[in-house]
Length: 621
Image (tube, rainbow, N blue to C red):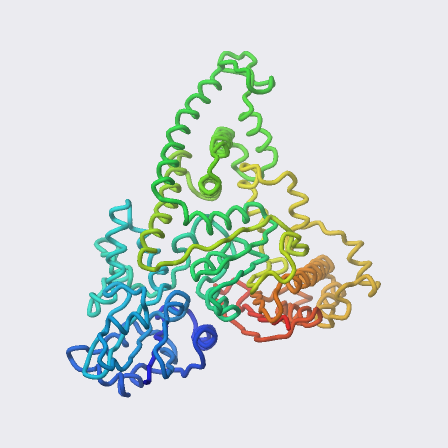
């Protein structure tokens, strides 16, 4: 028996190298060597696909629907036996549809489907076509439904609309094969199915969007890399620079456990909420947040009455006056708001009334006992603080309720969608810790690592999160956090200590890494001393981080590091610092071997210096 497979690539991939490298890498890691297909016509004209081009079936219409750009339309392979491809359906990132043709040998298609894709639902994520000798299965991957669910979040106002839109999505590719979509510029009158045809790559679907965050990972690439570095069905994926948690979320979608390490307490909260809130029962979550809003309205009203001059036993006697001009007692909330204002920069520090509402809300939330729900509500409050700090002029309670409803509906949508996708529950936890010394992670306990370190001095993560860190009471000392945060462009590092390392090789842990020292010396010797020392410190920090990565990885396991190069002006020209090559040299020195180095182009404005990323894949032999 021969079984023919064709893996059709998504039409929303941003660049051809993703099809050439990432799509092929994950397919071959999960299923074996593949042959590229430059045009689906090659498939249609060959047997056994050509048996299904007659008018009654017209497989060519399915194959040519929403074709990808670029030279490669998909990949093909033949096998001698029927195999269960459920894992492929759940895991693949760049494949939109899988076409499988088998000889039925007298069996009914439903019987064969139990061998090919036993958890599939006909008319929702699989359909089949039956002729004299063959059965053709058309199977849609989980990634398609996950990505398109972003449009359901965008337009659904309640559970009933969410239910209807999930049903529409689950049948769309099978019932709307010949649909002519509305114009992409149409603002009024768009149907749900018109959104599904938009040729863009959503990245903020479901729990990927829970809080604003700069410098986010690319989810589709993350999933493909996890599939390559750990194709096994069980295991623990570590991201020791986990940021907003993209790696951990994607690991959960494909059924793998995960660990995160993050020095920023807000990021750790974000990661834990993203990975664990999807397991909260929607009804319980809705009941809790509605009760919270009711209590909050009462507490704010009561609080405002106290501020009009009523004395209270709570608080501290300060030089504050009520409406009659007499001294009064400040509540602890007012006192805390004034202290927070002293720590904040920007316009928000002047709005004490708003700060008091934030702090009052945080106190009510932290009284809750159910940790997953409590953390979900805290992150919702953090997102509201971020919104009101950056751009929104909305009233606090309205903005908070709006965000709670949006995030609740994402949890509800996950549960509804998972009735079809059947994503299994996994374990995930993110530690607040230093990646240079991951005490919480045991030796050789991790099956794979995927991370994206800070690009030396590219982004100021602490300054971006400052209001939330202060108002949620997540950090005692900004100075200590900024000092320990790798790649922080504002950190006041110890210059004399770094100069001493440069002068005395015995004290320099990366002295023998020639490429690293070449660029450090280029900068410090050309009147860019501060930049040179920052780059030097970053390379040292990464050296200790990679040592820790080596320690916690199992033997034979892989680590993928995604990083961009930095550009600094030296004299009259920009010098590119090859971070990828430096990390490669560090990894080899520590004991890794190089598996792959992939150069990934980024779609950015002309103003952005970082136009490319390097994916460095290392193996612990």
